[in-house]
Length: 391
Image 1 (cartoon, rainbow, N blue to C red):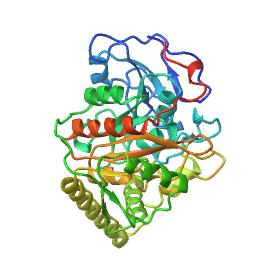
Image 2: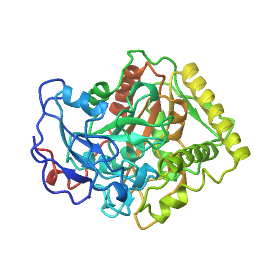
Image 3: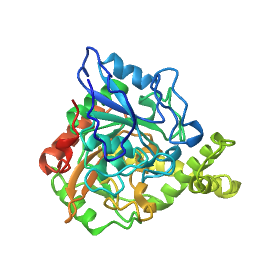
Image 4: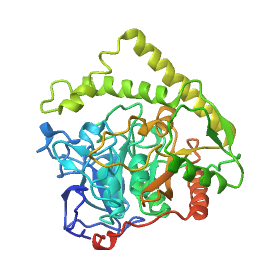
């Protein structure tokens, strides 16, 4: 199993052209792995220049499971510096370009994994999702992404952003591949999703009009109109509280690490400088959001939301702060979520929609995603994909 040399997207930072797989349910499958997940003998630096020469001494548990299932691990993908951000314009390893439009962000922080999959450089890729970092690139790159429930996938061999929010998850070109890889690396439950579902209103998120139109079409493609629900706090307030938690954790973990970019250094000041009283309020916001999202999913079966409130954007523009306003909820609640392609902007950029289910209902969540995916039929390969396919 090899992968084509052509990678104009800077999706892979390291590639093993001689990688081979074995026998098992993932036999013949080429899989890339984000640079903060350990693959024995491959770079293991989490996008940080101080660790650029470090190699993993052993496989992470999820990688071990992939190999056991027969997959070939073909390389290491680019990512946001330290996994904090959703643009994948790494100051040390360069920007990753969206296969649907060069010069545009693929999302992040698992942008290299999303771009590698969208471009056909591998069959699937692992990313990490702290507040949306698998599903955001899935949406921006027009592919499929799965975030397992927090306690159903191992964090062994992961350089974490925040262990309470992190989940390793796959991206793929279709739901069958996504589910096969998801089952290999995480614990699935066979529970069905009952109920007509729910969506959020008065969430305080400024949604791009084209994203709003695509999301409305997705709601119309469901068998029943989802119930409209509200959270006690706006999504932006919840997302900011999540960011404070991540900043606080990463600031402690990266203390003394040299070579951090000024941008990352700035992000790491927010948590430590928050102050005890405000930090306590932030944690209360997260705890309340966790309970409310879990209650909505338990009562209504699932929660359906736009994946990202904005379409892909140029690297030359600032990263929209609200990109994780919807995706953060599944992490805070510890629940599984799937993003699928839902539609396109008028100038040909992908838009995604996500569904959040209960832990233990992973099979039901994939069944729901298949039903909606069949109705929407929104997947579209990048124009240049045929030039950069797996071999």
